[in-house]
Length: 323
Image 1: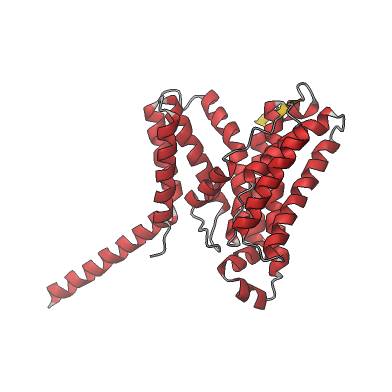
Image 2 (image 1 turned 30 degrees about the vertical axis):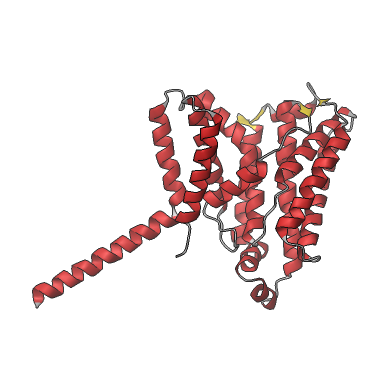
């Protein structure tokens, strides 16, 4: 009897440890995957761990990471924004065009306000007009893209040598400007979601909008604010891209929304809302970026890269399922 009792106790302890290990892997899937990817990449290519390559990865993916953080705020509410690429596109054009027209620093201020305004429109359609986020932001995609092409009028706006490319392509305290901007946005988003009533409200809305309303949360206002902040971050990404390109063109931005959604999903957020982490979303964005980088260094063609990216997204969704 004693032997059987000890065996049962040991089995229970073993099962408990297995469940804890399973929960740990599930909760930290993106972190574990990122660590393994870094190890693999450093072994697969001697060029990966060079300062030049790491800097390139950080710079190239800072824009995607900023878009991903903006998408996270919206996804947490149970929504989605398919117009990310069009935000980036129109803000690239406006930034370069306004600077070219001699507006100076006011160009950045105006583009920032326009980004927030466009986000408010999407949020109002979702919150007040009761339009599904998919449809509302799909409409904004075509509207913003059309505005970009109308504004550009078939001619790229060059801003070489102006203050904005100099700032974006330069450094602040030794840190490349896009990376510093991303760091500031990350810290602000971390504070908002974890330490403010607004952040807790977004999670509550994603969990159950009616319960959130009964708890005294202004659901409609919060939704508009989420889309407005998302629009702001997408606009900032566009302004950074304009500085990196030193010009404005309506041919950029395609696929940014897919990369943003992929980063959010790989980071553990659920598209049904109520779940999401800024830190894991950031790691998810750079996981996808490092993956593309190492495949480029290994000479893998773009089409197999697309297939592998899709497989990773599906794997992340399966890893994050509750059942």
